[in-house]
Image (cartoon, rainbow, N blue to C red; front, side, top):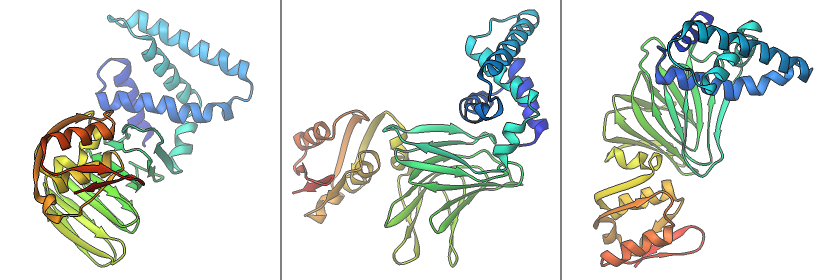
Length: 308
């Protein structure tokens, strides 16, 4: 990120005109980059505390003099971290900007990150995103493992490119979901135009289109889908109206890491409407489904669900 651009964000934050995306970035910047590096800069803990106290006091005095509104303690903490960065000549940032940055979700719930370009990335559990060096200055290149929902800010001069195993997804500004496992990679488009390619094929996809890459056979295919079903995992409540059991199976796999094994292929095309929440146990959901439908779903070992 350019130093001048960073200064602009800071100035907007201090005068109360920053956007939610810029606020989120500064907050994350404080929590990750600054916390990760400040111990290496100040080996003397007492010295670090004194500098923090001095900076915090100066910001507080400035706000009390110039601001009409009451600032929160959290705001003061963020501002103090910002000033500290400038006092060190932005050495923290430039050090990190020239290296990869890893975002990793080790929780059981989706986790959202706001990048400096304003894009937001929601990582599913057990997923990670590597932001490559010089991001937003020379490129917007990242690598994904697992699953993520992308909401990309438009920038024609710097396309956003995601590498997932051996394929690439390239966009200017749009919304889409990428899910990868050992067998396939799915790119599901919610908005705009998405280009998916590897060393031999390229497919341009639009809304309600899914590109599937078969890792074993090195093949890209295109299918029509209901794109909203493929980023349901980012929500807390799932309201499903008139979906097929095959679509429900993909939701179970993405949200609960359970796969439905179909003994009868006809069941795949049967339709269902149901509402449940992220924290609902899978047994409760299956009981609800079995109560209102002719077919039965039974939980088996190894995260498998069997249909009759």
